[in-house]
Length: 231
Image (tube, rainbow, N blue to C red; front, side):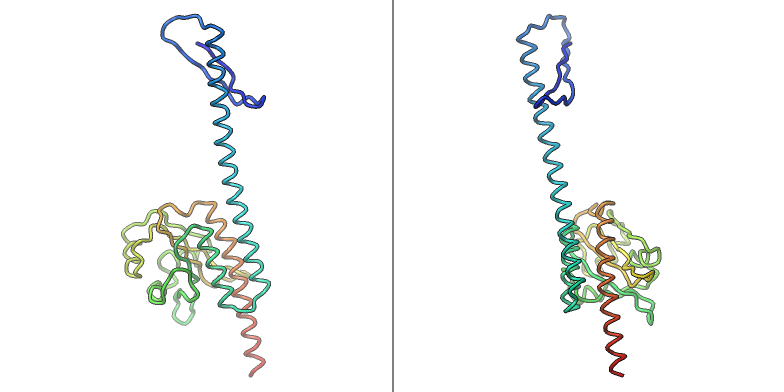
């Protein structure tokens, strides 16, 4: 048995051990060779760790940039439709999704209705996603007030999505649009990849959905004020 430290730039990463089945005496040349191999392994480990850290930092930077763009949209609410489309596009891209849309609670019909603008959805697909407020993933998110994700779709989910002409969706998330203790509706996000919505991604979607809810709330308030003035 021979054990040597795994070193790189004076930093101890771990140790490497080599076992032999037969008894032998290791020479200095053996030790030097094993030490070199162990140090190479240490460099490789540090390189992998740094690469992972760089990827994580890039992901965090992308998230911060997206949040900044959403904040700018909120502070410059000139075109409601354009602002919402900008936000839903950011949400889809950041969550590595293929489609995203806002669905609003309609009291008169007690349903959740997807309304434009949407990212990657046609008008007929949006219409087919309309459901009662107490059913499907949208109804769950609306009533529970928490984000819900289905990363492995069962036959019932597939049937619903196929009826909406979305047969290639493999995972879906629904996030409530909450502002001032009210739930305006839900944010739908669809992905063609299974297991797309992990805990971190759901947390990010919750932040973005909250920002979108503020935009929607403010736009409705402005519209109601203008209608009152015109009466």
